Each structure stands twice: as C-alpha cells, then as structure tokens.
Picture 1 (cartoon, rainbow, N blue to C red):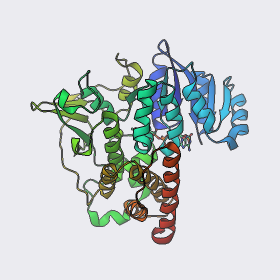
Picture 2 (picture 1 turned 60 degrees about the vertical axis):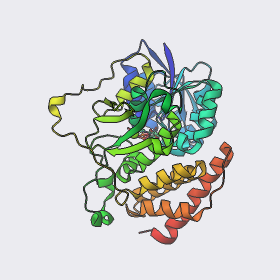
Picture 3 (picture 1 turned 90 degrees about the vertical axis):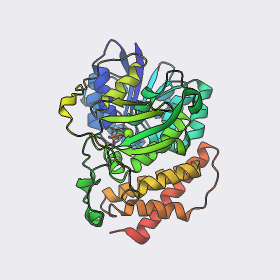
Length: 395
Ligand code: NDP
Ligand code: MG
C-alpha cells in the first residue's frame, strides 16, 4: 500500500490522478489533497478519497474551507498556506507525491517532497525549469526518485535503457532525444491572422484536455520550450542532444534515437492517465482506464520541423536553456504573467512572445545559486513583464 499526497488535486492532472488511484483502492491510500480556488470540488474529492488532510493554498480561504468541509461531511483536517503544502509533501507517512500545482507556485512544495526523499511524480515542469540544478542536487542528496509525468518525459523515460546513467549518452549508445509536440491549434493558421486569435480558440487543444495555462503554452509552443529545459535536467542532456519534432496526432509521445539507427518510441492515446499510472506503479504496470490504441483508427501519422517564426516562444525557451538557470527562471515567470494577461484580454496572442522577449532583453544575466535568488529573479521578471504589458502592449 502506497500513501500518496496529491498537490493540485482539483486540476486536470490532479483529477486524473485521483481517477487512477480510485481504480486501485488496494494499492493506494490518499494522505492529502490540495486545491486553490475550486474549494467545492476539493471537498467533493475529499468525500470520495477520505484523505487525512485537505490543504488550501490561500490562508484567506481557511474559514470558508472549514465551513464547506462540515457541510460536505469531510472528516479530514483542513490546513492552509504555503507551509502546509510543504508539510503534507514531506510528512514521514507519505511515500509518493504527485506534484501537479500549476506554475511557479508548485516549486516549494515539490522541492519539499524532493528534499524529504519521496517518490516524486513530477507534472509541475515549472519547478524544474526554475530550479533545475538545485532540484537534481537535492534529489541526489535525499535519494528521492523522480518519475516524470509530463507525457513526453515519461515516454523518454520509458524509451531509455533501464541502466541509463544520468547524462551519459555515449555509454548507452544514444544519439539524441526526439521531443515530440502536436504544434497546437495554430499549426496551419496563416501567420498574418495571428493577431485575431481569440482566447477560446487558444484554449482549445486539438488532442489533449488540460488546464488553461498549459493549453495556451501548447498553442505558442512555450510548453515545448519548457519541456526542452525539463528534459535537459531530467536526463542530464545538453541542448544539442534534443530535437523538437512536430507530430500533430500526439500518438507518439517522444522517442530516443540510438547510434545504431534504432529509434524507440512510446505510443498511446493522448490520455494523461497513462503516464500517471506509470509513475504510481513503476516498475509495475496497472490499469489506467485508457482506451487502447487501435492502429486501424489512425489514418495519418505525420511529422514536421517547428518554424520559429510561428513559434517564437519555443526559440526563446531554447535560448534561455543555453543561457542558464537565471534565464529559464525569467522566461517562465514572464510567460506566466503574459499568459495571464492574454487570458484576461489585456494583450493579444502574439504579444505573449513579445512580452517574454522584451522581459528577457531588459534584464542583464546574473548567476543564481540558491532558491532565494531564484525566487528573487522570478519576482523581478514578473514585475518587469507587468511593466512592459502596461507600457506597450495592453489592448
Ligand atoms: P490546472 O490548471 O488544471 O490545475 C492546477 C492545479 O494547481 C489546481 O489544483 C489549482 O487549484 C492549483 N493551483 C493553482 N494556482 C495555485 C497556487 N497559486 N497555489 C497552489 N495551488 C494552485 O493545471 P494542470 O493540471 O493542467 O497542470 C498542472 C501541472 O502539470 C502544470 O505544471 C502543467 O504544466 C503540468 N502538466 C499538465 C499536463 C496536463 O495534461 N494537464 C500535461 C503535462 C504537464 P484550483 O483549480 O483549485 O484553483
Ligand atoms: Mg507535455
């Protein structure tokens, strides 16, 4: 029996995680679930999975959460705030933590799980994008096992040899990692019509059902850029070891190319319950409720190279990856602000990349060696991005 904390339980990954867990009550027990704004859904989840703790991110909602808990007949203890998220991630009773809070808000609780040596099911890519070196160092120190939940990284993990030595491509005969992405909803849209992209269009992914932030990032391919950085840290790769390939059908979730000419791909229907089940059960396999892939249904299987003119955010993220930790933290922070501004109708879709570029250009590179410095760069980049939006781009 594994005891699991689900951070970001009310989100898309969180709901899918509870779905997989519910299929295997004999294997998994939920220790804590967390949510932010969807308190009623959080209480409904607590009714079903009977956790010891229910954590809400914002202290200000504590009273409301307690009232809802009694209304819903939830027995769990209600906790609130950033420290509580860290506590339920690092408690001695916990075996595994699903890190599925969106954005930089997930950094500290995810790191708490890493430092406590947990099995960390990593969906929150932003944590690694921001703190890569410190994150990996902490995992090495504590013995935490990091299992990638991002479908591409989970695929790569599955395609690597079982005895893969971190960063040593030569020893395993690996030529490169092929990181696939669908190209999002605007892969074929004429570039001169990008200024009229509506919020709803950008929030509709052709293959995956996900939270709003990552869906916009998929449309700009910033998501692939963040994943590029994530792959470097997870597998000890350098930027030249990774090639981004557009695969619009999202059936291949990524591949590893070997020096003998072999390419190993992981495939499946686009359903996050597959990597979630893999992370929960590794090294075993469990039923995940996913419709099996039927090749007679696939009429088209295609690939193309991404064009940076269409996806400037992808280039910004790859450049940041080459530059280092300070740049990756800033590009992530700026992008969170820009995506929020787009979703609030303040800027246009193509302004997202422009805001990110202007933010990065406005800030000279500094080296960051601690979480405090990373958080400082995160907040400076947010402030700069907001200033740029107010000054230049607001619709
Ligand atoms: P959602 O937006 O659906 O869910 C985000 C979760 O985080 C919700 O539980 C939300 O609570 C909570 N949350 C939001 N803001 C805060 C905050 N400030 N403090 C604490 N908790 C907060 O996102 P997804 O599930 O789509 O994504 C989660 C993570 O997984 C992201 O990092 C994403 O990049 C990654 N990922 C997601 C994939 C997917 O298929 N969805 C695929 C691969 C990676 P509430 O809803 O109650 O406000
Ligand atoms: Mg992904």
